[in-house]
Image (cartoon, rainbow over all chains, first blue to last red; front, side, top):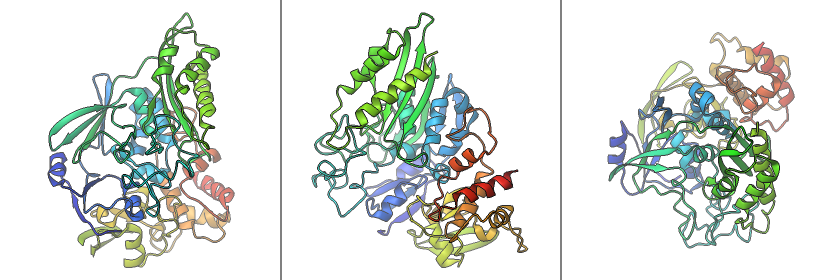
Amino acid sequence: MRPFEYARALDGPDAVARFRPGTMYLGGGTNLVDLMRLGVAEPDHLVDVSRLPFDRVEASDGGLRIGAAVRNSDLAAHPLVRERYPMLARALLAGASGQVRNMATVAGNLLQRTRCPYFQDVTKACNKRVPGSGCPAIPGDHRNHAIIGHSEACVAVHPSDMAVALAALEARVHVTGPDGDRVVPIPGLHRLPGTEPHRDTVLEPGELITTVELPSPPAGSSQYRKVRERASFAFALVSVAAVLDVGGDGTVRGCRLALGGVAHVPWRAERAERALLGAPATEEEFVRAADAELDQARPLPRNGYKVPLSRNLIVRTLRELTP
Amino acid sequence: MAEITVRVNGTEHSLIVDTRLSLLDLLRERLGLTGSKKGCDHGQCGACTVLIDGRRSNACLALAVTCDGLDVTTVEGLGDGDGGLHPLQAAFIEHDAFQCGYCTPGQLCSAAGMLTEPGPSAVTEDLMEDPPLTPAEIRERMSGNLCRCGAYVNIVTAIEGVRR
């Protein structure tokens, strides 16, 4: 690991004031410390933001304000999250291990890097790690990579479960930075790789997430489902966050769908949502909606399985949510 | 370099550390507490699990410098201080919950932390309940601790016994 200077920030403004080129903010460290050990991240300065006073979960305006430094385990166990945002609690509990959830922060979960094996191996080329060096995943091992929204430069996926639920809940991220405060919606925080896969999000250097804000819960019932290679402590092959509101006449009044494990971002399935609005809540229509979304999938030679897996997971989850 | 004060198993230590030092290496190399094990050094195996301020954590993923002012409990500090075993340690012996023993300190600290954690897990049906620790709940909650000897069956039994 390359030597670095360490400072613990006192508050948000202090953290931002300490930021200079070569600085990285440190939350729970469950991803960043690992990346530093691997040589993937080489900060000159670490500014520790894990003990900033962004550690509360509070009800506000019918919604919820979640401090950026709240630990994943505390958020999942919070009574308001379990009662009003069960899909978020499910997504959090589906991620990582008890130890990691105890350490990892909410903002760190959003900003964690892909687990693409080429990204994590400094002896390999990777456009995300070294722009312009190439993408060995495209001709190589890409079983767990993207099927949608990827580019010739990068086929990595975003690894978070929590972010998929937040995309379906239309959360907003409050950010402070050298040029002041702003609010960034999810989806919208993460970006597709395009020709700049080294940029995971739209955040500018020095910007720091302070709060994640949830609007009031959408009408209907919700669920988070995740398919993975072992029953626990594994990243998603495909996951889905779904909200379904069915009217008394059996038609869909509202629908939110977001997919994990398929794209460089938590993927909001807007085409499927549009296809379902006003349609009968039947398996036939769920299949049609899933296909409307997955028509734009461009699977790689060895991850085509994710297309039917996504379709089946969407259909099964919507069927479960149908009264 | 940075100066830190950490309380480990009730004893306060003031040390000057390289900022790159992990809590795990601090415990093992500087304080001689070799109970906590280095398995993967990536947070994937759980052999390094300790309690930081009472919460189970991967000591390999915690930089020592971030633990300034915090309270750490390792497997050496789980017992009653007079040489008596923690009930989990006694249960692991009674139920033969290990073979080579390498993962055991992490399993013990993880189980000790797990027993105090509120709320549901990924396998809990009703999110609003604090479910009883059935074998399925224990298996899910202990998934951050790997055992290459495959002593899982007896580890679950041992933890179940303490819970009862």
